Length: 133
Image (cartoon, one colour):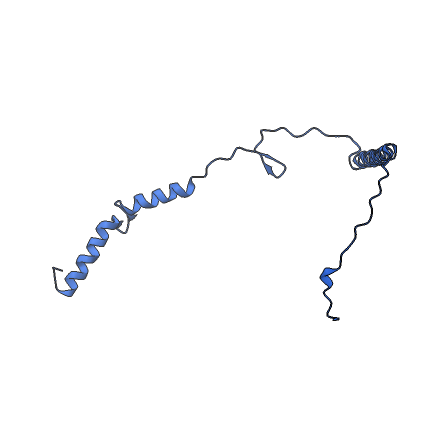
């Protein structure tokens, strides 16, 4: 480095061209851009129409009747709340807190969970030889 401070260099901005832009020139550029854009839009639309005729020569078909449970692979039925898990849980809880048969021929029953816990605890206390706590 030469030791001079380069930050002190002043830059001059170039002079502005004071000539006004021609309104006709700008209008012509915008009109030309719109014409080119329109040309591409119409050309693309024509290509899509030709492709549609090629892919479906019989013309557009009527859609299948709505209201069916399933059209092709799309399920169009109304969504309903699935309560199977809730119902199964309630059945299990009801069985857990009630008396009932497991195997009537073998004489096997089930008892409420609270009663089964009390019975297991009392059997454990009797094995230890103490009735109290």
